[in-house]
Image 1 (cartoon, helix red, strand yellow):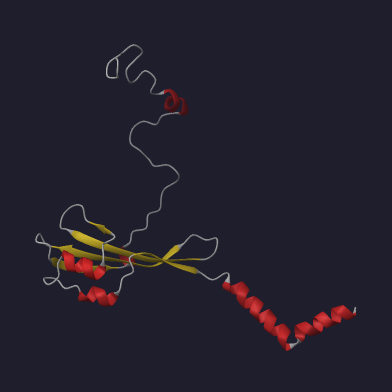
Image 2: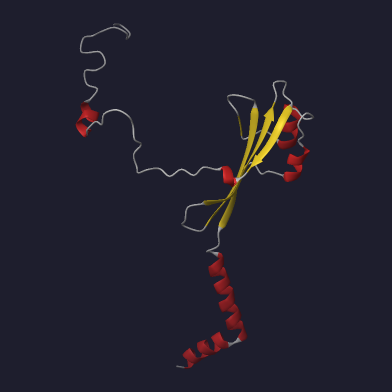
Length: 164
């Protein structure tokens, strides 16, 4: 019984309260969100130095570095993509901030336009179920399993391969 009183007295003392507060702070800290930067980290000061008509591809690469990806069609455009995600433990990450810096070049390689877009221009897609719908007829399990038997070549058809 005397030991129980000592533990109770210890919890009501200053050091006991401090230990309880520190333990609660550590427990709450474990539930805080985790922030992760992904992609290019955009520096607004460096972006402001890129000027249309003055800079070219070489100077942009020297200032901003290599782009995240480049356009494949149309006007040559370099894209610098940046995202900051946050998540709580055991929960899917959510995008907190997202930005895309697009630097367009003319045919001679000089900067034509610099455009910065944010999360407002992002399209969020919600898949419909676990299957992707396709056009055409639907096949059953046995047709999927045995559907190609006899379709390509045949027994003794020969041709094509080595020695045939």
